Image 1 (cartoon, one colour):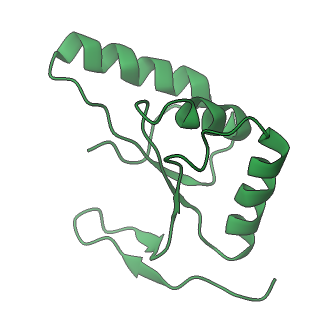
Image 2 (cartoon, one colour):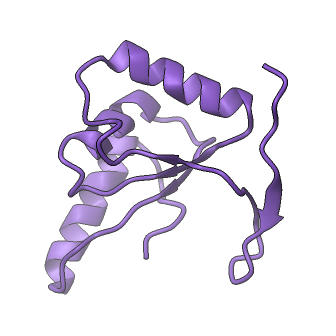
Length: 108
């Protein structure tokens, strides 16, 4: 594939990110992991290595984490919807274990 996604600096973070990313809501809440793996591969081929997800997207984040386990290349943006600091911390630690990463790139 010859297409490439444009990139820009994220103003506050100062890092270079693709202007187009891959959203997981509904799209990754699908049982065919081989198909979803091909979607991730295609996104990488065109330079869309920013992935947006959240634990509340049904099974999407768990599926994404299983597909990316240990892979440090995609930029992962996630959200945690809770106001209790202990609950937020527990969800975040669970995400780190699921992705097998030392950190998540963005968590608003």
